[in-house]
Length: 277
Image 1 (cartoon, rainbow, N blue to C red):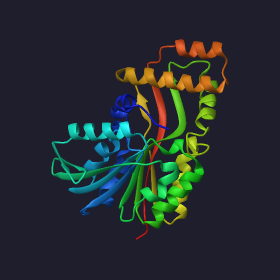
Image 2: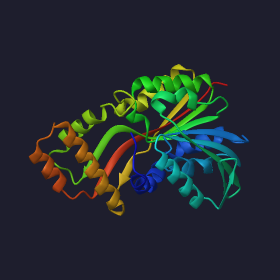
Image 3: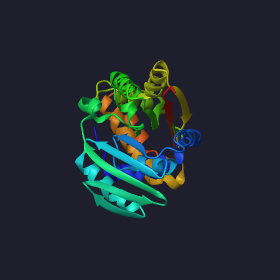
Image 4: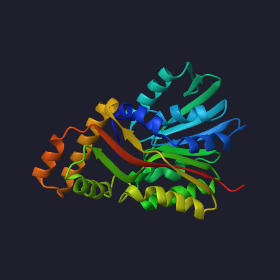
């Protein structure tokens, strides 16, 4: 399971503006006064999650960015250097200077489906991810909760799909398309049968059972005319996934594809879980 750097760049603005502000503030408050903060970012892509989360944390940060795709790790290195006010290489790591913050970034290629325990190194203060956990299995989520809680790390994830999807203008096939999309999403993406829209609840319930304090907040994409390029790419990917299921007739699928979509709401949830004192 991997995504192109172009797709990740296209969605970054919508991702950043959709994050739940209440949870962002809660994360910043939890880590207030911590120096340094050590972070593991799972499925990091091109580093978008760091670019949005690092401003919430303290002046000295150490991040390990983990992804399976070496091309995305290379793109992350390039885009983070472009984002920072300054950058330097030190002992194989990338040191970024952004405002008053010094952010040391290491890059690690790993298959999370097989190497999760090794990736969750001891000493991490925060485990984070963006737009990942609806694509993994409930068994993987249980292992994640166990690994994070054993290390007594905080957990913060954003933009986990929650099943809500509404297109503008509406189409008679919308409901059938969404049902077929969810059937496609439940297939194996490399981690076993995917949790799909159940993932936010699985995460919250798992961390609560581990004694964590859990907060959840809405982070839906609300896409409008200024997001035309993202809407078009999203509609194409949505229809392509539906086509693979064979659950919608070719005629209905063609009609849906032919419609010009001017807006879309895609439901997401953010989750913050902090360990017991």
